[in-house]
Image 1 (tube, rainbow, N blue to C red):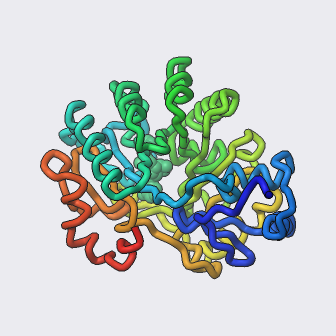
Image 2: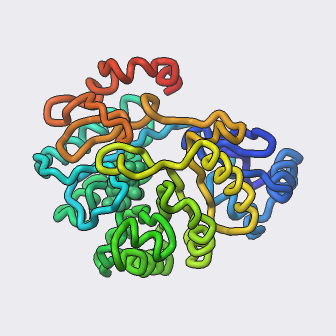
Length: 354
Ligand SMILES: C[S@@+](CC[C@H](N)C(=O)[O-])C[C@H]1O[C@@H](n2cnc3c(N)ncnc32)[C@H](O)[C@@H]1O
């Protein structure tokens, strides 16, 4: 019997494999197609083969006994809105908000646990901000989250400028935390957007993560200012050994509304180009989700289906990129928000899936 099977999370679209849960789209080249055919024919696959290893790492291939039937619910949690940077495109006003107390945060975790247990889902949390690495009780919160058995993945989304100490590395390792560092271009382009010296600081933190075998990815926002730099950026990240770059589009809201988005034509061109370029690099390029429609895929948006955002002031939103208030963690439970929000109800068709 084969050691692996194709994950039920993936739909084979011929030229692409689509992860229907995360929306990630992978191009199927000749080597991958051959592997899938071998799999169907029951030919034994060696995990040491590079493409098999890649497909295992990405969850495309799984062990037969692996239970992949549970869906994942994702909470994006802005712990604070304070930040040590002032990125040009940021959607966040750095106005003073009244943050949740630590005790209220613990109640949020407990309530979230109850919610996803009842839904029969696994939980994912991304801790973000503002800048989460300057949250003074981050260690306690991470350890509390990881003490609950329903969380299968916890991430910290950071601007990567606070040098990771040995204690940070231990915290990430002990609690299996994935770290996403934001970079919006190679040195000159990035630093024009994110601030002087930021690129080098991020690279030094990235190397540390890679050296310590901590799951590290990079998030890059595409806008007019940096579109021409994208090819150089991918090559640079590939060289550093980053496993994955998540590209997304500028959302023109908040202070970031003054930045210029790329045109639909540019978006199509860059998405097609990324699919092509993927053949030449090891780093996994995850394209701009809504633009998949431009290259013949359906695309997937998890809003109203399996995600919520909790902002620093305790307000719930369908997504940080849809700043519509649908509840308050100080008074509302996840159940109340999820099942009574008028906005989410409009997504009923999708929500029935979970
Ligand atoms: C708001 S930041 C918070 C976490 C951390 N300070 C950081 O820089 O990663 C999270 C991510 O949102 C992205 N972001 C901020 N404003 C955006 C906008 N207007 N459109 C799209 N993404 C944006 C940032 O580039 C960053 O990757």
